[in-house]
Image (cartoon, rainbow, N blue to C red; front, top):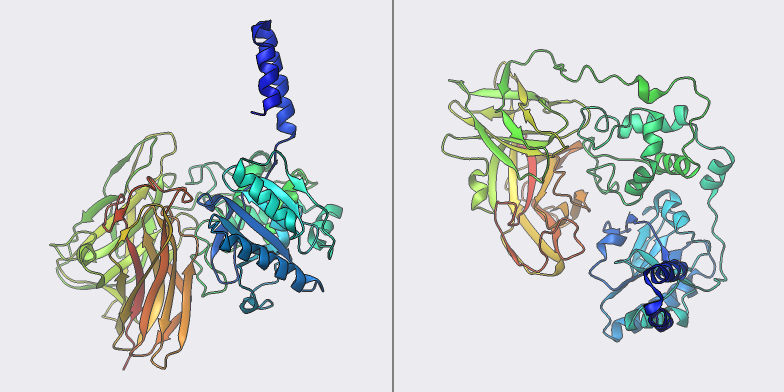
Length: 576
């Protein structure tokens, strides 16, 4: 509290409770006008594929960001001054200050070469972050306090940046410091277009919601609220805007520049601009006579898409509590097969879709549990059947002439993950199996590539790598990342026999709650002698919102309070 405020309070201490309360309210109200500007959380990938989110910088004192415009003639001088500031603070030993740049036109990696820059360059897809932060000049610098989500400074890369940072570290900044920036003016053509002509709810906005959101956000869906009408969408629009800009939604996002999978939730810059600008305009209903969201019908979600399965696995009855965070639930299911069976396709039918968040199934011998050889081995080959994730109902058909072998006498080991929604329930999920009439040419297998370790306390970027060499040619058809609460990122790469490198897939913002099996849209053939790599990091700091205790070191282990770093490669061996 400022000294003047303290003095006034002391002078009025004996004036009576009502006077004191009134004075407190006045002072607190007045002080709020002098506080630094609040900013909403935001997230972006940089052009190296790394994930950056303001709220993930809690382990840092400040985040300093400069607007980048590749076409601005003054850009080189802006960058030079900005890099000098970064170097000055680095030499002073202030490791708590992070410097980044933001490509305010979101040009994309194909248009911008990052080799010329020593600082991360963040891609502002659709210009939505820059316009939300009201960046109007190239070379404009913004200084953020990540802990309080406030803006401390807006202006050029000048001495004022250092002064604000020094004041902030010395005790705080009372209000946002604004200094005019003389540079190239930024334009936001799509925002201007949408201000002139607001996106139409029925024709433009609702189709995006139907395609990307409504399968989960519906009555009896796993989403925490339903998007089943305009009024519901409008009511939740501030939350929708927030989770779009900080990339919490759509879930299971991946690096769009590395590989492709229909299991990932991609959303285009145009779709993001349409929804966010519509929300900014007040989420108007428009003139359409019918509401597309009210017309949605999900009554067919219990159908078998490939017809009646050859065999239906009836899952266990699992009681799900009404509240709380639930750990994984493991069950094994006996099978009656007296001869080998080859599975060509599968489909899950969730018992209670509102609570079943994901499900993984392995084929295991009678003496193994769900983890099998993964419990102790860093490298293992297993029979992974398939996984379930919320969203559109799908039947997974394996590539032609491939199948998963269920040897006679083997069982299914299933891992269930549930979320609570305020009511207790019982889930019983069914799994439909479709068999080959005769053994296929190729067996679909899964290669486990893992690392064992101990994560130090308060380490926000504990880097890890695990490798495996394929001695024969393989065709990779899918990947899956698995870590626990400290998981941060994971990339799947390969070194070919000629020494060249290949990036297959990347999960830059891992979330323990979402662990889909990403089936590659285009299978990748790797020649014999290829070394595959799983490269990534764990975050055991306060910046990780799921971290139970950043002050504790965490050993490797299969339980959720321990930690894992495992990449799964689904593949088959083609004809030699």
